[in-house]
Image (tube, rainbow, N blue to C red; front, side):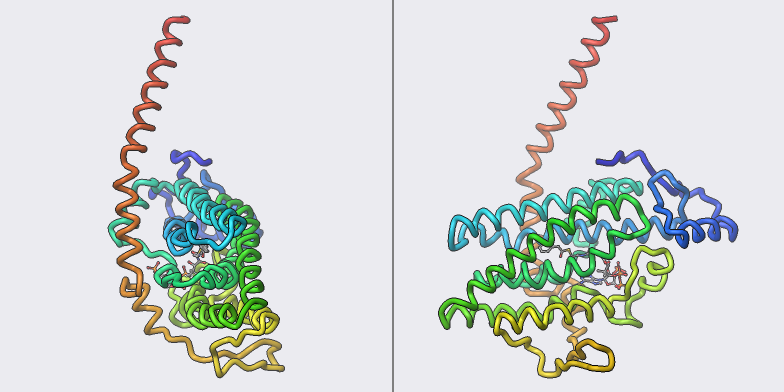
Length: 331
Ligand code: FAQ
């Protein structure tokens, strides 16, 4: 999609006040920054950090649902879930490509993920224990992802913003398929409705944590908003998600597991209970229920797929050699 050779900042950019002011003026004028444009090194690094974490999340995020493809209750559900999980893999690839335009290689990013040095979204360290979890993941996890990513379609960095447009279209199909699973379960037997409630109970709080730490603890938010990488604070997006999800839960006849959730007339939105930020940081730092299993699986898949990468490289080299000798013969 993008060539790895396109590197905006070369590390030699002289970032004096005039350079930074000219860059900020472009951002303020809503001009997209493209890979070959000069950019402050901090802007480039912030994007590499966020886009690569985002790509890793998509790739690791295939695991909780991938685990249910062979156990989907009907052929239709299986086909939809298979397509969804494939989409997530595709999102990872667009995002790695967008990050590559900033001068980091796919190999470096993969190495950072496999070594455990890179972060990915906390949500994917929770297990999908029942079929209802697949409904809750689509409804809540994809729902939270869309809430965060719709705004990223307006991110100041062109390749990231453009990748997000397609990703968001696919995420909205994912959200619908999840919610539709929840509708079916909630219209089913008592046991099915209980499964749906149990999935909501386990996925609600981790979904709220997806938006990141609150104001004051979000170290990157201020600068990212100035650079228009982010457009809203983590808390604002979390609130929008809660306001959208509560009526959806009511329609399903399910109860949000937060006794402190209350409509606030003055702010025209919901107040919510305290989020367990200790749990969030524990999971982010590698001590969630599934962190070890997720990385172990990823490393195994990387090892198992090594022969495919080697074969593809050998094939590409042979083709290049054949093309070169045909050119020489024709001259
Ligand atoms: N998990 O200063 P902030 C999906 C880290 S895709 C883990 O607020 P920032 C699709 C953060 O990286 C889901 N770490 O950071 C799907 C930073 O660490 P660092 C992923 C987290 O960047 C659905 C530190 O905490 N979406 O779900 C988390 O300004 C279903 C301080 O935080 C994206 O990546 C977390 N939840 O804001 C796939 C969207 N939150 O780098 C399969 C793009 C924060 O200093 C199935 N990313 N941290 O070491 C973003 O919008 C932002 O990066 C935020 C964090 C909002 C996630």
